[in-house]
Image (cartoon, rainbow, N blue to C red; front, side):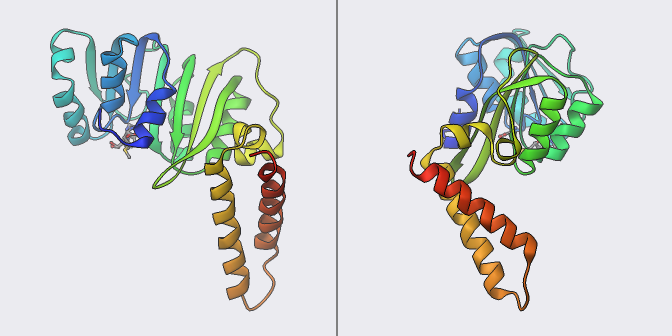
Length: 220
Ligand SMILES: C[S@@+](CC[C@H](N)C(=O)[O-])C[C@H]1O[C@@H](n2cnc3c(N)ncnc32)[C@H](O)[C@@H]1O
């Protein structure tokens, strides 16, 4: 597996399952990890781009040859078998991930790494009956959100703040999340300083970020 922190964190959230699918797999490193660690019996790799999928097919050629991996070029979940246990969708926008799930089906376990719009994704998952078991921000040159959601089961209570920032960031904050909040505060301050008039939305965002920072800073 290519050794980046993002991929290590992503793979660290994958759990043993019978049938795994990597939607938008591109290089296929996460599926390689699942197979090398013997975390799944079979896997489906998929990508909307034949060129991207070809990279994963090359990486995973021995597994494809032995019949443990099937490769499908398709949009979203359209050709993913419905009996797949665990689905990874990483490196796409949160709205795109929501569209993929709306147009496809709702797998029992999802590991998701949206590039933006994580709050929309959280709201969607909760509305569709998922318990979000892991929900945190991590850093690898930039900040990423990671969500692991299980359909049904006892979920944690999400209020406005957990929806906006991620449950684990609020309840068991990390230095990485604090640094994201500090960066966002600086961006808001810069926008307010550059504006020739009041910008209430930016001021409200700044106030919220400052509250979150003050809440979590003492707990680190
Ligand atoms: C930035 S890469 C992420 C690759 C890998 N999942 C990761 O996290 O390292 C996004 C990949 O998703 C694919 N993709 C984008 N939209 C898609 C869709 N609707 N269905 C399937 N694949 C899609 C792209 O072709 C690209 O290979």
